Length: 446
Image (cartoon, rainbow, N blue to C red; front, top):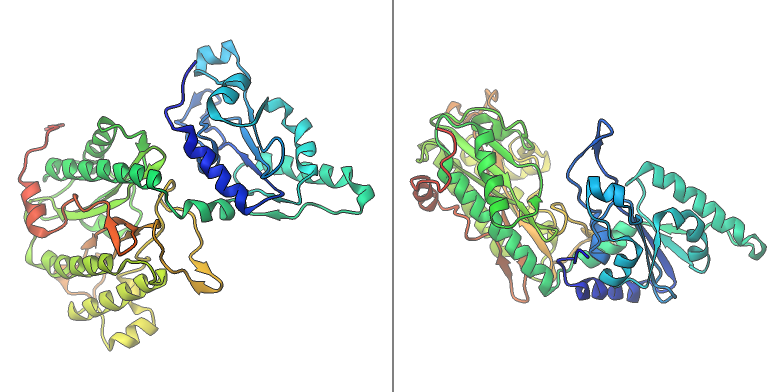
């Protein structure tokens, strides 16, 4: 029997926390669909985050039905044991393994789902389900809802009210436990080490994809299970494209290289961005943007503490970056005029932060009771101001055109401030230039 590598008590505690909030409800959480090419070749599979969050179960073709306070409370539908498919595609836990290894109350084969789900939902007063994960499963759930209504027609009841399970579970996931923070801290440590390896490897003449290979090699060698997202490795003016993913150009002498990449470890992801000179030394125009932007980023990290509004971080970044754009000659007029007209978005078009956790852009409401959310201990988020000057911006000083710089750290809110989980990844100019002069431990192509 294959044994799960996770502590099942963690998942029991999460289910108990969800149950305490929603007695009488039902949660239906299907697995993420498998990605198959040409009906034969499977892509790497990652379980739906919410299903994993509550069970630790990673197989496709499964569904969790969770009914707080009822018996059985947790029912896991799974693929049956099948020697032929296991020969071709790997081990399956089956019903017995799901029961013995994952701590659920009941397990059935997935083929029984349509027959059993109506009975499981009939005694519930509301349903939590997230639409649009799997179109076929959505259609099945519409049929299920109609069957539940029809089965209770004598009571005069209508359809079960349906709420978004992603929002409900997201409010739990927003607050990281000590266990969660420990895993996230390791994901960030792996990510930081990989960025350092990439800094040491990068030099004029290497391809962006070779730098990406260095990152991914380091992720896996340190025990990561996958990349948290497709890395952005953007040399020169490519860095002014926010989600640049071609990663196929040659790094040139004089280029800045922007790397936005993070490893996933234990279903938690790091998310770090660093920008540094391929040649090993910042030029004077590059310093003119980088130094003040770094001071802005560090000031924003210092702002993070319980009681401040999440939105205030972005407002502070807009204020500071607009002033920087005026100092650099990128904008004209007053700071207030450029903020009110949103003229600053030409050079700073994104937000300064997002929640971080089991998904890189993690779940959790940013508005509560019609007000921007207050930060509380256990929340994890990014701090990532940036400034991007389009290469064809004839209104900008010529020496700044094509420069794109972003600096991103991952922090978790503590009782008195925050812990910077990615502080070991260099970002001071002197530290960056030192790393750029250190030989890489992986030589790669020459």
